[in-house]
Image (cartoon, rainbow, N blue to C red; front, side, top):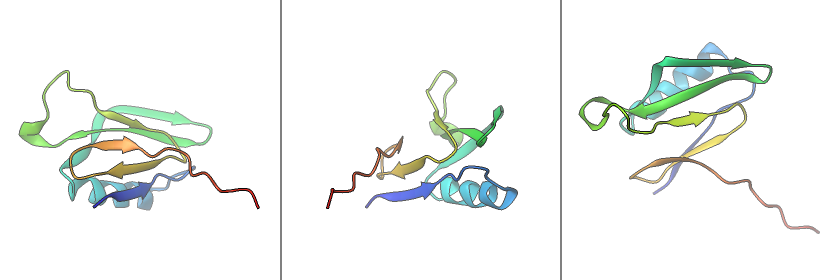
Length: 86
């Protein structure tokens, strides 16, 4: 079962807390050593929690407006949704 989270443009403190809870439910966390602010809002770097995390393991950078998917094994950025032309 795939779970998704939309990281909004101009994310608020409440959005950050919601992301932290969603990530924790899947064994991931926001990397506190990486912070990026941009005109569209903050970008966050996420990584696995605890023993699963090893120095050098690639995390995932989530940019404002991106949708993150967790498929039970890994986190990734969802591809764009294609809407059929009418």
